[in-house]
Image 1: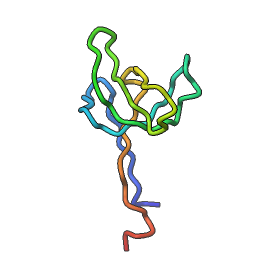
Image 2: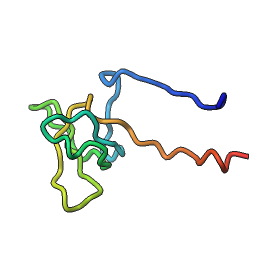
Image 3: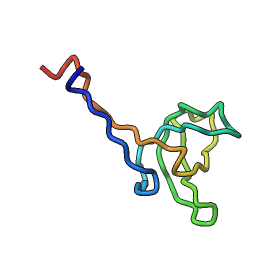
Image 4: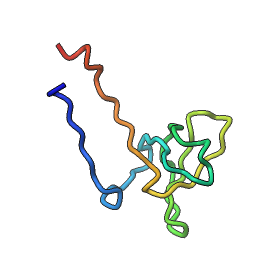
Length: 82
């Protein structure tokens, strides 16, 4: 599809504000959490990680590096763009 575009920004150039919706990916020690969605609640300067509270309330908050977070955008459904 010619209308689709992908944008890529290095994670070091992204500052996650509190409340930013994110998806976990590339986790190795907690690989079972890859794909989980949550939101950034705080930033821990000591560990240089964001604290993410997950949508699944049964899961504990996760401290994740910037490289392991992808911002979740609410994109319009392509079928409804006409």
